[in-house]
Length: 349
Image (cartoon, rainbow, N blue to C red; front, side, top):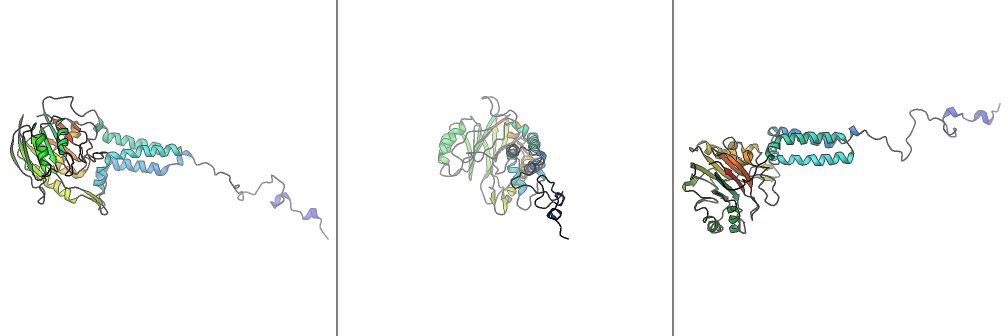
């Protein structure tokens, strides 16, 4: 018996083509129409990579002494750039704003708080003293062996009215220019190799300080200051290099160890160390010296006291360090014709 077309036609419940409009598609077979947007991701699920960056930076900042070397002196490199960890904060906040994501914003706040705890004391008021007065004003400056204007550099240093001026990278050719300017105000001076010291007070003894047998870049002098004799060290340590094998610091670190040993043998109580240590202030590699002497910038300076490179200082590698001569102020001088900026301090003598 032949069935009618009506009997053979599929009903709406079969879900076949031709089903009435509005018929429900079976569960599990619904498909998103072309061009239809996916459901928006929740705000709290956005920006996790940026948040991770901020939190890892905060952890590395708080525990910077524990950052491993990993065979490439990673810890030393990180501590050399430590203050710049704060630059991550605006970058993460920008990412949070673009993504409208609260998680990276919260992580940036955590990083900002850690940075403030670590560096807040460094940013308190301080800097150059308001004028002359009691005490000893000292200046140290790597003048650069390629300085095109040594006389102008010397005049710029005298603007700070110093009692002691220590110079590094003093060449034979430039020495007469420095002497011509500095001798008029600071009549006592000594030079060994490429380091030199000018003083308002008599220099009663001077000798090469052997912390690197192959170089003459350090001296020890005895100065009859206003409060009695003091030992003055002028030092230029080995440079560091960033190369394919990492942060090359072995030569400099040997210099630091030898310098620490020399300080242990220093008979005078009042000690002043001036120079280019090629070591950023926060680097734990400086411990052989900072465990024996105090940083004038850390004690009495305002800000980070960055000295290198002169055009846009990123790190403080030129230092004034003391024992028995408390610092009352510390600051950096304006750029000269050198690639370093001078560092200055007022000491209670």
